[in-house]
Image (tube, rainbow, N blue to C red; front, side, top):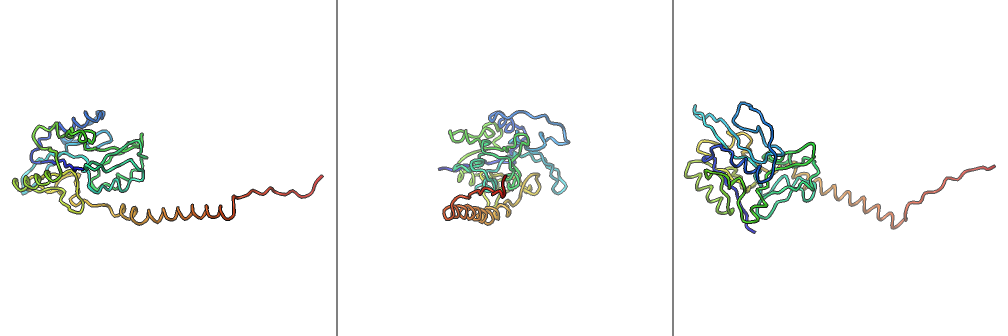
Length: 261
């Protein structure tokens, strides 16, 4: 099965929010009432009903002010911490194409995925007790289409294609403009890549993780504590069954009353 990557060339982003609107339109997400917070970023953050957001950062470098506009959504990790942390089978699934897809039917609202995500992406609805996030338009890419956000982008900032081709394209573009590819952690790869402009690092931008990795808490729980917990539960169940086989069902003895009329 072919894997895909969405490439975001930040140097080409004009902040038009076409991707933001297209995401809402395709996924039938309702509009939200917002307010001015002193920034062109609107709404203020990702929400249960806003899976894609254009972030605005004012970065000062060598005395010069740079306005950086950036498409922000799920990074679709190759080894997703959210899937690893999720206790409900089917609620979060890593698909062969690279997309990490959520299914609200199986979501129990535990928020484990929110705590585990190194990019702070999943959002919770406290009334529904469900989480939601970008799905990389899995329903579109499995039909040979591009994600809605990519289709709506007018500048070529967003592109989508086979993993190997997009990785090569990202590094060539970064070299051409003197920029960098983000994230660039070979131990924690993603199916979304950024090309950052020259002089701009991940640490300069809001809502980024310069060195993403699987949280230690998730590794300890899934690989150490949880197996022992399951073994313990199995031992208790096994012991109870063995007792039933050797001693039989528990019998309730009637209380004998002494004396009489």
